[in-house]
Image (cartoon, rainbow, N blue to C red; front, side, top):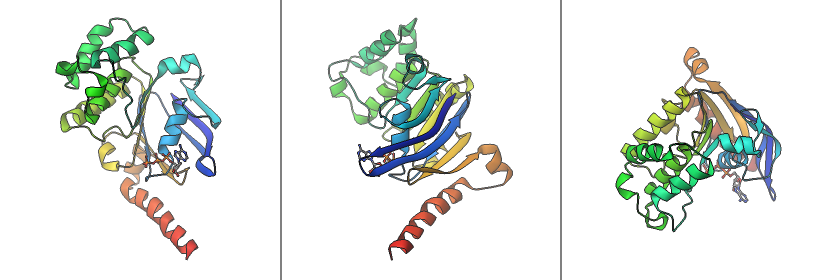
Length: 241
Ligand SMILES: Nc1ncnc2c1ncn2[C@@H]1O[C@H](COP(=O)(O)OP(=O)(O)OP(=O)(O)O)[C@@H](O)[C@H]1O
């Protein structure tokens, strides 16, 4: 389970996150939806332990910067970071050895085949296209069997086959009891996947909806998103006029 409680993060004068709280239960897919600059990547980086922040974040009950939490967490950043001189397979081996994963070779074979990287295993990190890097980044996170997984704009740059395999992988993670968090500004890409939607605007959570709630009320998430994001920018415009 992922729990984010009252997280505030400021970069110099910019308050990127203000009192952000939400949860993603085990066996659920949560989305963080918001326009560019809403603060999604910042909160994801706070969860991943890459930024200092005020507030409390826990991963399956452990503080997010503890070793226990790191062992359970997978993070696929918006911009994949490759080791120039490691091959595709060595990226997976590196992660598997760091996390002491048993029988990693079989898992690596399955993941590389699934994401059509099996014939690219010997390519170096620096020789990969952006989409290939993204796929290696996904495989490197999934080989550790994470219980909480963060995906920051995961579909950008992927081809249709990889998008389908990633969506299937997200459902499998959920069905196996993981908490999955997807940050995106593209509702279309996660439409059929989410269980809980957190809409962010100006560094705050502006609305939270469960799928059951929106279905019961016949509420349209896209309509809600636009009423929050465009309503707010119309208000900003009025205030500056
Ligand atoms: N390293 C940084 N230094 C200073 N300001 C930053 C930094 N990173 C982000 N910001 C600011 O924090 C705010 C939130 O940015 P963030 O990247 O979290 O938004 P986002 O919702 O992920 O946007 P996008 O959809 O464009 O990726 C923005 O105003 C941004 O300019």
